[in-house]
Image (tube, rainbow, N blue to C red; front, side, top):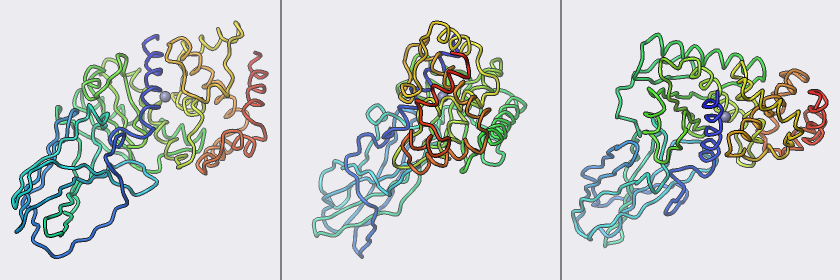
Length: 377
Ligand SMILES: [Zn+2]
């Protein structure tokens, strides 16, 4: 039980960390709006390739020729993830000016923070020469695949599940679990997946950690919401835990797709509360942590739970239990339609209290009071 609770603590941290500025573009050298001009000239790309060394680096290789010295080479790229503007990142490539240049640029994930398995980049080269001519190559796509394993996959509707350990029946069971979680989510909240997602099932948490640049000691699963990718370590012997984890992470992705906007994110308690609620059966450890907080009068206000939860296990499990309980109160008292209206309001970038007042007629402080009254706190 404790491991499980600890896990959610971690999931939260990772979720929070990855929905911000994003790993690959955390330190872009330069950004700009995509334009492409290709005047006639003698700059000619002989070869352009990308080599994947998962999870630590991506190496981009270029051979380019010209009839005068090549003086400036930049690698430009975009990462496939949710964006609200069309921007690319640009890296200056070091080389000696020449009519024939063979060079490369390495994306070191230790510096950029890493990318999830199966994420993809589009890249192209911008080259200038001594006569003032410039050239941009045609964009190419490279998938940052975790090629340490032989992945198999199964697909149903919007979900593709990748796995390499365990039988077909094991994978089918997990995919069925994911589909059932979606049905449950839609019937309780109206939320659903709007775009395809991918779920990578690692053999265990050790393999999962091996896929990450800075894994936390307790990493069990990660929702890369902006990439529409989930990575979880599930041993076939740990199926029940895995099913809950899939439902939890899948809910984060669906809720993200339903609410994503450039202005505001969901309050953390609502995001986590929905994910725990949609697991089906809430973790008994969280519920007992909540009961303890009620009897010792140490509940945390909903307003405080709008920010990332404590890194300490006990405090975090109380926060998860409380978030679950408030979401449960909202859904059972006011129904699916109101929850869907709330998510739609957040999708428009609404401030927290404005969204609650608009949909339910009360703000978060009043919600806290109503909920406490309901549970007898
Ligand atoms: Zn979560």
